[in-house]
Amino acid sequence: MTQWIQTFSGIAFWPLDPKPEHVRIADIAHALSMKCRYNGHTRKFYSVAEHSVLVSRHVPEEDALWALLHDASEAYLPDVARPIKAAMPGFVEIEARVMRAVCEAYGLPEAEPISVKAADYAILHDEKAALMDPEAADWGLTGQGLDVPIMALEPAAANRVFLDRFFEIGGIR
Image 1 (cartoon, rainbow, N blue to C red):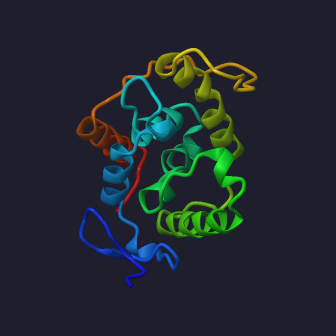
Image 2: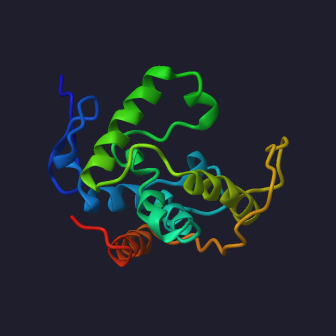
């Protein structure tokens, strides 16, 4: 049984033993552009890549790359919904290992900046309004949204926008 996944760029990536040298921005951009937020329970396709770009535009410049890559582990792992992930400490540790490899690959601190957490949370308001039917139960959101338009880009466009943003903010590799 294999313990690795083949990435879009054709390399073997070992999600249980991730190495920074195996992290590729092309793989991250491609995979995140193909993954729909909210487990696909949206009125239209909305990728994790587009979400990441929007978050990266609403943090201080020094945190923009961290914000763009804040969901990069999802390029190598399944996206597990928050209520389920909270009950899966083993998965949370695997996800943290992948994020450590991503951070090391791009010279980022391991700790997610507060501004990234705040923008990631705030955008939920905008995403909910643009993508979801009326709520079946209270989401428990507080504060304000970012007031950003959600474009719901097709995967190829989301991939391009993600890579453009990566190079715009000085990403390398």
